[in-house]
Every structure is written in structure tokens, then in C-alpha cells.
Length: 126
Image (cartoon, rainbow, N blue to C red; front, side):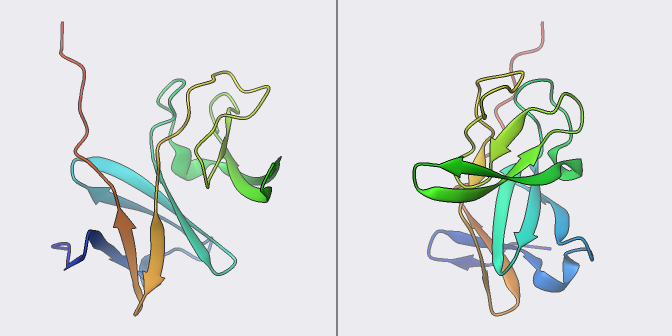
């Protein structure tokens, strides 16, 4: 699907593409982005765990307490690093302190829109 532009937001999927679990994986600018619909909100995170590149689309959904209140979080299926879906911050006890890359997301007119997705910058091959 060719992304539609609205301001600096990009339409990346139809809302109906979310699986019954409220999840989807989309390809945006050379990277996979995992989408999670929790309640009426949509969250978007780079599908690669910053710890060991595990597939975050397969994460367990949890909640974490923050200074701002309760946030949804995901726990990587490989080593159980837990990341806040609002901020991307790795939670205490995770295998890493590197944050997951999250993107602003919204649902509008039956489409899932993301902002701030940049092309993946791969490290040079040795």
C-alpha cells in the first residue's frame, strides 16, 4: 500500500488489518513496525528488540507504573526485556537499558497513522 500523507503522518494500514489479538506488523520505510491496539489506543514500536533483535510483535502485553501513571508495556519473547509502549523505556530488571523505538500512532477514519518513522540505518557490514 502506498502511504497517504496527512501533515507529517503516514497511513500505514487499515484498522481492519489488525488481527483479532489487536496486533499487526507493517513495513514502513525499510523497517517492520509492530502495532498494538490496547483498548481504544494504538501503539507502534520498531519490531526489533534493542537487546538481541527479537521480534517484538510476539511480545506479551503488560502494564508498568510510571510517574505519569499506568502505561501499557511489552515483554520481548526472547529474553523478556520489558518496554513501555508510550516512551519506549526499558524497565528495571530488563536485559538492556536501551529503549525500544516507539512512534506516535493514531487511528483516524479507519486507518492507522504513524509519525516519525525514519528509514532504518543499518550498521556498515564488515
